[in-house]
Image (cartoon, rainbow, N blue to C red; front, side):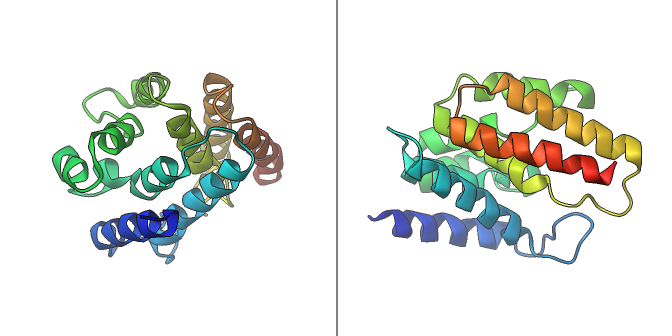
Length: 177
């Protein structure tokens, strides 16, 4: 299959699972977020030697399934293989942990995965560094910016192109403070 075929398979699967979901604080389909993450990953693949775009793009499109839908690890494994299922699991917060430990736990798991998974997390945060929802106060906005900095620091060396993009997004996020 060509990259486009893998993209279509993953986006169709994600589209069914995220069907009624909206980007928080908006009326925009959640598929826009997933497409933005995949676009960041595709562009990074053009700037990164030895980058497995097929693996990364599918992971990007599926990255929120375990966290935001009723999709199971087993369903992802059956449809996309164990490596993608493990990548999606690493990118998902463990809801059993206290909220304060969830992101660090996920980052630790991401760091044990291939660099393409690191790239998906960087791309995810890049996509999320848009104008914050109106209901967020300055403290929430500042905390979100700080967490982006932690992600950038923890995943340094994962993908230079996306690291640079995230740094620029963090700097631009100051306009909301």
